[in-house]
Length: 183
Picture 1 (cartoon, rainbow, N blue to C red):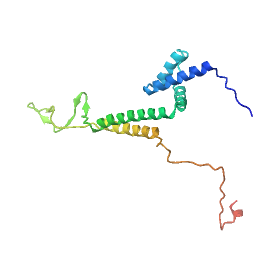
Picture 2 (picture 1 turned 180 degrees about the vertical axis):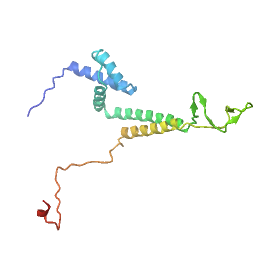
Picture 3 (picture 1 turned 30 degrees about the horizontal axis):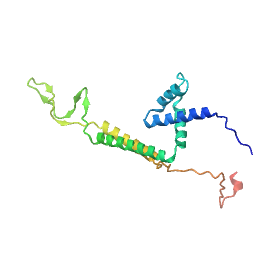
Picture 4 (picture 1 turned 90 degrees about the horizontal axis):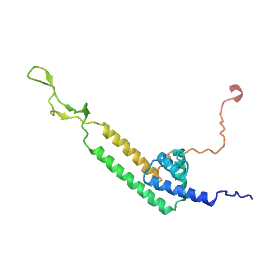
């Protein structure tokens, strides 16, 4: 029975724990992983070689795995609150009135008028306000993304389809056909 010996020195373990703690603090402040990598390189490594975004994401996940469950629950609650606030703000956009603007002018629906010189003219401010659907569609898309993040955060993002490979094989039998004639 062989045991692998951990060759990490106490100083290395302490530096790693300090870096993991810094990563968690920065991420709780919603700092992007690329920026965390830059800051960690300045503080814990070589400022000219920032850590990659992927490496920071991996370190963040492993650091969270080492955090006591009570702190994870508190962090999850904070994230849920932030996502709820984002949904509330997005709902405000969804419910708002968004006039259609073209070339700096609010667009309205109406009949063209003829001015006193017989030329077509636009009656400024007259007619029904045209609404822009773009902000509403963007808000709907954003709400869908936020709800998806909430589902994943709370463990509800389970895949619908599962594939199971049993490593077996299937035999087909054709009844009423002479197999010799098929080959």
